[in-house]
Amino acid sequence: MTTNLLDFDLEGLARFCERLGEKRYRAVQLFRWVHQKGASDFEAMSDLAKSLREKLKAAAHVRAPDVISEHISADGTIKWLFDVGEGNAVESVFIPEVDRGTLCISSQAGCAMGCRFCSTGHQGFSRNLRTGEIIAQLWFAEHFLRKHLQRTERVISNVVLMGMGEPLQNYAELLPALRTMLDDHGYGLSRRRVTVSTVGIVPKMDLLAEQCPVALAVSLHAPNDALRDKLVPLNRKYPLVELLAACERYLAFAPRDFITFEYCMLDGVNDQPEHARELVALLSGHSNRSGWCKLNLIPFNPFPESGLHRTSSEQIVAFASILTDAGIVTTIRKTRGDDIDAACGQLAGDVMDRTRVGERIARQRSVTLIPAAALDQTLEEA
Image (cartoon, rainbow, N blue to C red):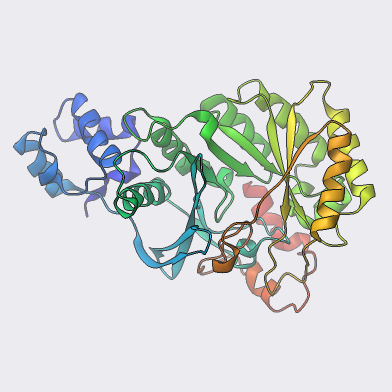
């Protein structure tokens, strides 16, 4: 069994080279070939000694998961479905814009968080992705797009961990992947342009701030604990007062001077004027620092099992007006790729659910709150 070099950040690759009897500087050369040039054939790595190339052919490989399908939206969004084995498949989405190219990648096969409005959560949870499976989504997409668009310069300028899974529940595998994205010998992305999205695993938020502070997006979705308990079950373990305190601590390390809060607009659930006013009180009352947070309102992308509906555009605009009038910077996310089920909250892939929570949800015609007992193990692990 050979080793996939995509599993290593630069430090890990240096240790691997040392085990092969090679100097650490060889790792930099190898890292550049793999990540900057997209090479997977060791014979093509012309500045490596032939003896090293022979060692690598015997001990290592560079391989992304197989692509099961590719769908291109009318707006240029591309969605790939990757086979990660044992009946599991994960999705990645490239979103082209005039001034940037954003790749949304997955961190788990499925998700155990059980958020009511998320299609991924309804698939259940199988396993964490390995570091190589996380970074392979970027490795494949970047070098595919260069060929597809006939470009030699970097295509992907932003990466968001907003695909399938809760990134901070897979922290040990996430961290080397983030370091590879940021490394100048890898993809050289700015910390400001790599975003980790979380529903709020407070201890791991603190750890990320200490070890690899990138941009942070927090899935808020409700202005009070009672409602958030129903929409985001992890709130029972880390209620809003603890979550917002962790956000404040993160700001001391963050590459940006604000935290982004994601708020999915659900018709008749969390989108009323009183919810907006409560949100103003929650966010304004938490910090005296001006502009410490930004709110991103996300039109809900329906899927059959949710039992939920999208708030009207007029209501979203009215909701946003209450927030902006109170001085909270607010944006309304433009829906991209919804014609290929690539929009926010729609990524589901194929998951062999080992938690069986997804099975219970699927049997319900209208979605209700997942019983607390069904999430005990998940909350303990988080």
